[in-house]
Each structure stands twice: as C-alpha cells, then as structure tokens.
Image 1: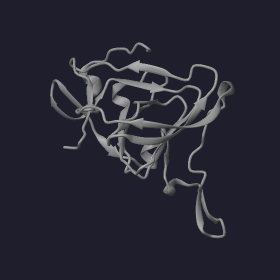
Image 2 (image 1 turned 30 degrees about the horizontal axis):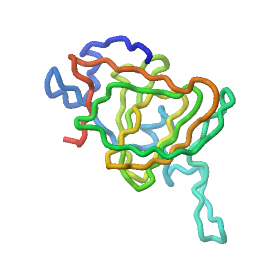
Image 3 (image 1 turned 45 degrees about the horizontal axis):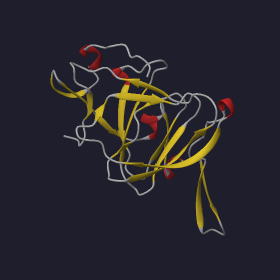
Image 4 (image 1 turned 60 degrees about the vertical axis):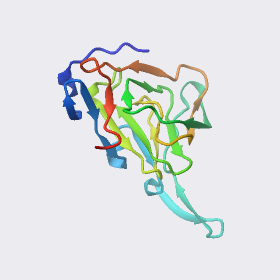
Length: 193
C-alpha cells in the first residue's frame, strides 16, 4: 500500500449528510457519461460511437462503446468473470486502487445494479475528490488507466461481472489506504436515505 497523508475534517466538506462529527457519508449519484468522463467511460448502448445493422439485418451492432488501453509494457487484453458479493452495511470506503498500465472494464452480466467509487489524483486521491455512482444495471464502466477506484461493490448476492483488463509483465496494481475522519471510515449513503 502507498502511504496516504492524513486529512482533517475540513477536507471532507464534500460529503453529504454529515449526521454527526463521527459519521461521514458520500452521496451516491446516478451513473451518466458526462459525470463519469474524468474517470473513464460508461458502457451502454447509449454510449456507442456508431450503430448499424449486421447479420442480414437481424442484429444491431452498438460499435466502439469503450476503448481498451492495455498495451503498455507488453500487456495484452484479457476477458475474465468476477463474482462479487455485497459488503456489510454501511459500506465503508477504506481503500482505493488503480491500474497504471491499463484500463479495466466491468459489465454486469445479469442486469444487476452496482456501486462505483472513483477519485481523481495522480499520486494520492484526496477525500474531497471521491465520487460515488450507481449503475442502473444496464450500464458498465471502463476505468481509464491510472484512475483511482474502489474494488467491486456488488449489491446482489453472487453478482457476476464481465471484466476486460490487462495481463502481462509489470506492476499494474497500486493500492492505498484512505484516512479516517474523526476515527471513522467514510461510508456510502446507501441505501439512500
């Protein structure tokens, strides 16, 4: 893990619903391409760069929805399936990770909603830069190379996700522990109150 500089309560003014000095909740926003653009791309039929009929008109191809960026240091694209399970409530945001050598895409395979937490920042994400989104179950995401994000936040038991990411030489994972606020981890405002 990369050490994270400690931040005081003033750094957390971005958090919604501060219910006491000991409770910090991050507001969850609906996922949309404009809001998510600083962190990567939303994967959905609505975000295709082109759309056309194929297979004698029986199939619509939603073309070039998201770019795969995995070629640094001899990386190759791979497809995997992650099976996630829900975390205990309230969902605590204690750490973040990033992949400096490649993008990483998550697509729900059963139409399930899932939560997404991201942050801008090159070396260490600041608490005030944390953003939380919820997919409507028809949307996936591609985290751009080097974007800080929380590991998978599934909401349904045994949620399967198609993953497109990188395999190959080099260190493609950085993890960082987030600071506590008044000795309490940041939590998500979920389910929404």
